[in-house]
Image: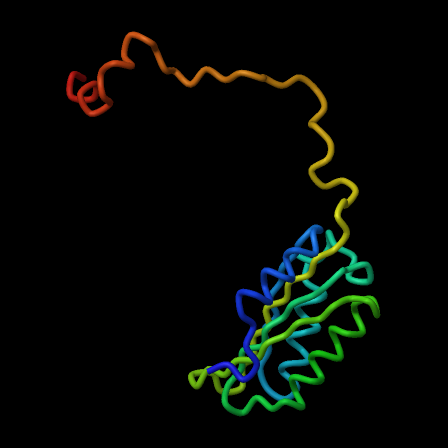
Amino acid sequence: PGLIDIDFADFKAFLQKKGHVQMAIGRAKGQGAAKDAAKQAISSPLMERISLKKAKGVLFNILGGKNLSLSEVEKAALVIREAVSPGSEITFGVAIDENLSSEVSLAFIAVGEETISGVGRKRAEGPYQSELDLGVYENNLDIPTFLRKRKN
């Protein structure tokens, strides 16, 4: 059951911020697991292409066992709040999984700047083949594939 649910409307509003989206996951066990999972998620190599200090918004969801307290959730939220700019919008959710004991999982998504240098903006330099022969021959196009295979 979700203590604090993130629904589709939250997710849609988040994605409408328009920018480069990155996602990371953090997992930890034991005392302070939510805070450790948050630190792991924001320092993930998957977050390298986005500057969290320039993020327009972040969305995260914490999944923990029945022992997960709101105090732990608050500590994780503070770690994330300190990592992003003061103007960033933060949306979060919390869910409980009875099968988890002391393990906490945190899914983290950030929307950054609309353009990021070096990402998808530059064509590959050097010679490249603009057309690729896929081996389709016009005289065989009228015969369905399964029939062509039977002939061989």
